Length: 207
Image (cartoon, rainbow, N blue to C red; front, top):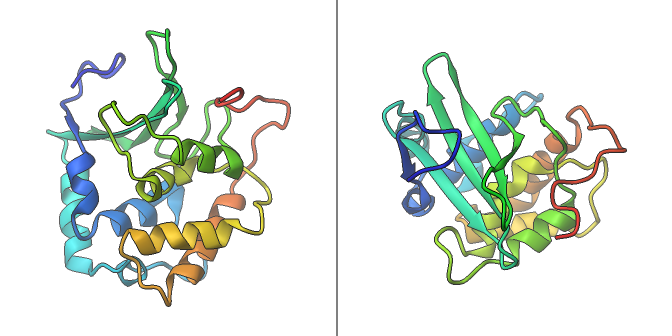
């Protein structure tokens, strides 16, 4: 797999890992520093156990294989989630691709800092619900929403957001009785991060 700007990285398709036990807890517990609050999330919140989560984490951060998760949209745009497993500089990068452009735009890195701006909840849902059926990558709406969740950059989300996120977590294997509280925790963490300049446009403006 080739992505411009990552020529030195041994990129591999990460989509097969999405159904592996432990993936979602590994991904969502580490996004942008999640888990630094008073109550720390545990794998069981996501329907996983610690051993599975540790095993998947080892795979995701293997310096010899950099998993890439492609989230293509129906209009030709797409987001690539890349585990940048450089020694001393590892993290997760989010790249926006657009039709007719040879270079991808880096939205944010694994430290949770935006290089431009993130997405509103409305944009996340619209992107998640608009897969490109003929393209390679993640087509399931719930998985797409969870993969893009770290890009949320909004002070206040709609009242329907916790239920929507809870439903996505349940679809990915989280227990129904804890999914609502897990959704609330994740949204609280994301909305509590430093905000971008309100005059910046969203990278998906016009999507």
